[in-house]
Amino acid sequence: MKKTALGAAGIIMLCAVASCSDNAKTTTAPETTPTSTVESGESFASSTNIRYIDLDTIMEYYHLAKDVQEFTIRTYSELEQAQRTEANKIQKFGQSIEDNMRKNVYLSEQSYNADVQKLNKMQADAQNALAARQRKAEQDLLVQNQQLNDSIQSFIKDYNSSHHYDAILFKAAGVYFNPALDITKEVVEGLNGRYNIVK
Image (cartoon, rainbow, N blue to C red; front, side, top):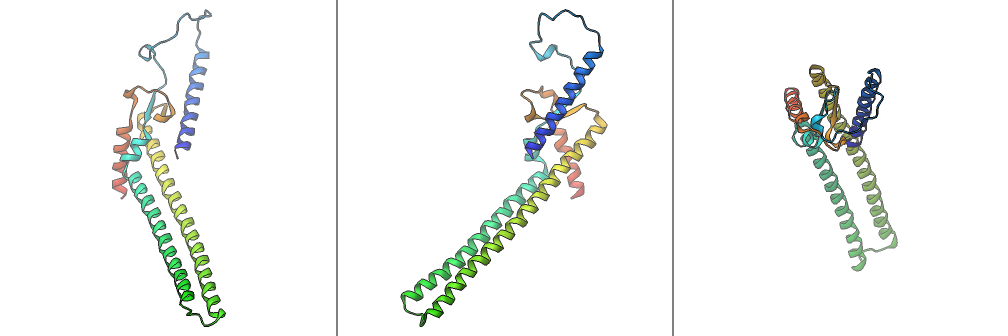
């Protein structure tokens, strides 16, 4: 999700830069080359109205993000438990075959082969069941993460419809942002307010 967010933020930044450069072309400027560059952001006045959000903070404090994280942990924990349960059953049956061989319980090779076949079937069934369970878990996690991403994107769009910023970037997309441009707290409060109503 971070890669997608960074990609989107990069595109927004490129559009903002392109827009600024187009505006600069339409204004008349002296043909002389400037002799000095801006050294600090304090004296720089931008016509582009930009804000930023910290995605890590949103993921930490947004209730839906925390629910998705808990769901992910629970899902993987259940998968591991299922794997352990199946492995224990197979190991126990395999051990019983060895014990029976040692104690000469098998009266014929046919009875021994039947147990070996049963063990092999147990292993194959467990492998197939666990693979199916893992595929379902991955699909469920994909849906959950897509809902989380859609929720954040939708809220940002609604939020910006009343604030009219030219761009809202992810903090990770830049090297430095003036802390005054940070709207993360407002966004988290808005996301949680909307999520609590829906929930």
